[in-house]
Length: 225
Image 1 (cartoon, rainbow, N blue to C red):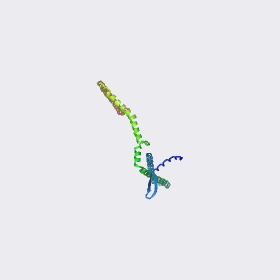
Image 2 (cartoon, rainbow, N blue to C red; image 1 turned 180 degrees about the horizontal axis):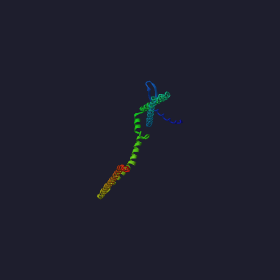
Image 3 (cartoon, rainbow, N blue to C red; image 1 turned 90 degrees about the vertical axis):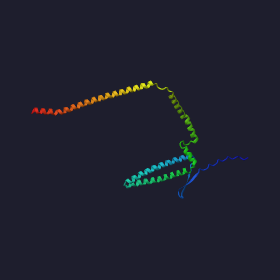
Image 4 (cartoon, rainbow, N blue to C red; image 1 turned 180 degrees about the vertical axis):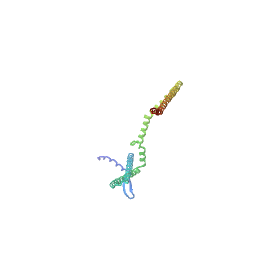
């Protein structure tokens, strides 16, 4: 009697790979194409980070070039040139990495890219799960808000209008308030006019006193003579 052998699990298919040429005829290397929407999002995030680093390195290089052009010290110039050379190498590496991520994205299937773009707002969730979340949010949050707004509008429409006497009393109060404000303004103007008049009298009295003092001094001098 033969013992049945356990079936061997199928070997997973390798991820598709794309052959990319860095320069015509030389430097062939392979890049693994993304196999899921999550990998596509990870590649895009890495590409954005590389772009930010390249922008930062470019700004630093511009500052170093300005310092190099403005200094005449040979030691300082040598140090600045070395730092610029290091930044140049770093920028070349960043450009290469950005080109690699671009080739990875272009080698991905079109359907996979579309799926990643549609689900980029909620990473890790499928389109059906996003739809279910939208329905739950509408029923649980927006539904009660709409019902409450409708109830408030209904109550306001059924509220009895105010009697005309209320508007009449309000108009009378506003009229009396306006008259009081006008009276206060007139009294303040009268007080200000009185203060100006007193100030004018005082200033004129001081001026007359100042003009009369030399004459009295001359009279006293003539009497002594």
